[in-house]
Image (cartoon, rainbow over all chains, first blue to last red; front, side, top):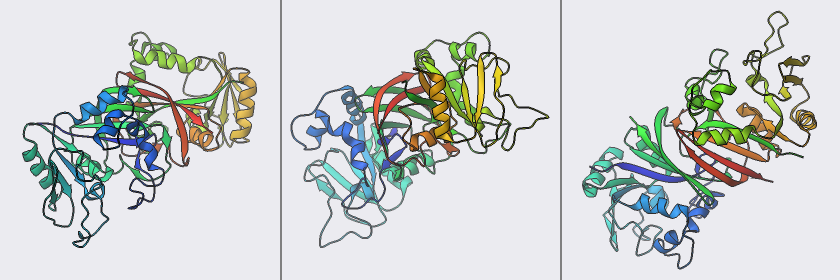
Length: 213
Length: 213
């Protein structure tokens, strides 16, 4: 059975998104700058349809490692997007990623509102309304021997961490103090970690932890 | 003129001390484990009177660099210790560090209660009641061309950071989620940083930032 792991970009003060998130500003005010390190990468640009160009630097191996051996992903309704509440039949929201999403594996979306599965290219989104344990069981089954990736947002990672269901967590720590927003490591209580490794890269430090249960 | 800089150990969730700090638990509940990385160092043990032994590892160069070129230090009343309120004449509190404090430079203590200077070995503690600007002016004068080190606690670093008076900040990020306590980077508002460097070491990641004004 694979690991359950996650990684996420945070500010130096621990926010995964800035204040006042909205459909127009899904990362909150000032939140976009958290991801400058990733936007600069050739790997990110090519895998997310941003076109040619970009750098290869010390972050490249980190993001390649993150994507390797992922069998299936869990994400929250906010990450999938489309605003809160029931799914709209008249104007269906099919995610932020266009016709060829960058996941290339089964994705399970935590939501309070039932919806039929959605297939775009080689990614099928399954909508799970029975909570985090049921979603993990379905995702593990889909992942087979490979890892389950908890894709966020922060609140979903928080829930799996607080429930003792996360094996590894990597933080991409970026050089900005946001001063407000959605903090990743709130409401999870005391947790012992083991530092697996840290990587210095341009405009970011990657620190990978094992969660000790 | 030297730089104004600081470094401090924080948990993965950004706390510089655990909850419920007291005279018996100056680092709060669970706060001692933040400093395991430092306690393990031969350099720390020899400079803090902990006796022989200890390791030389990737953290050693970081702490040696931190102490180099420091001309004078500012610390808060809580770091100096002795509890809140007026200084007691009957039972004078002379700090946590014994007869030979590890500072070896002038130290300026921010306090609301006047007190005559205290000299222990080659460290003189001067008690400043006029606030952070006055303390910085006195400390700069004492430091000459060398750096001013803001020695903490977290609230003092916070005040200098929020006032735009800090040039560099290094975080020693340790693998524990405390879940509560005194958070370093609260109440400082949005601040742009530049990552100077990051160092992976046993049980800690050292990330040094320039504060952009």
